[in-house]
Length: 109
Image (cartoon, rainbow, N blue to C red; front, side, top):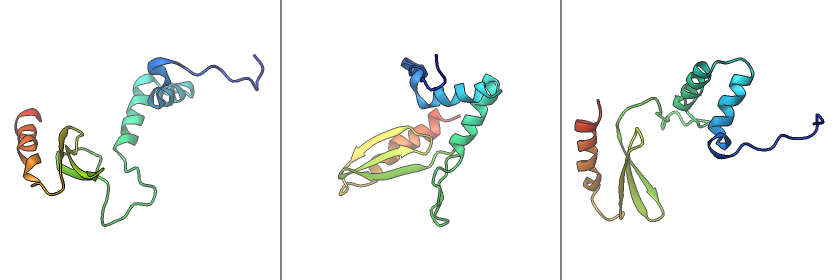
């Protein structure tokens, strides 16, 4: 194969960006564990290249109730990523309180 020829793209799970990053880290000398740890650390860091100091991203963990507006509805989730569903903007935000309390009191260790 010539130097200019490209290798075929991986298929299946190996085709995800995460899998490709892990493979690239291992190709330059990281063990599988250290590559995964480095990628996990990057996941916890803020993603905004120009963060607003008044509204900082918080990806390092936690279980705050997050309510976002999307497509004419409010979406509720936990900071850890657990979804709590959707409701209309005119409805009470208490819609998300019960599932969030259940999650934080019974599911989170």
